[in-house]
Length: 104
Image (cartoon, rainbow, N blue to C red; front, top):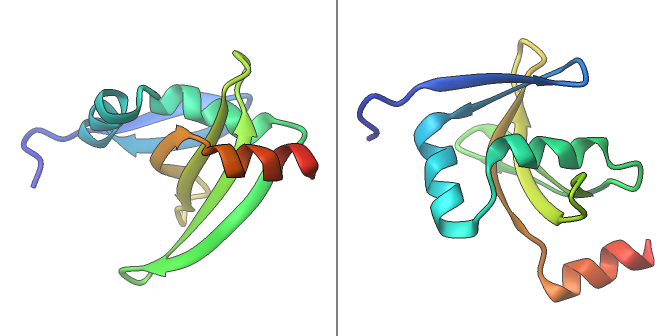
């Protein structure tokens, strides 16, 4: 359980994103990727949808996409009923994921 956790709302290019503040802080510490940076991956013209799975009765999807700083990321997210994208995690892609992205 997170104490004093806040839901962060963020808009980029007219799209609404949300995330848990503690989850975002933890992601920066573990993986060096902020969730606001992860949002940029959704605007990559070569974005790839790579996975959909159900976790705790919630469909989670994953994409690979490039940020404006040329970082290729793997981002896990879900769509909320209010048409907001909730970021769950983000990390740099693995070597094999990068090859798959580049071959697409």
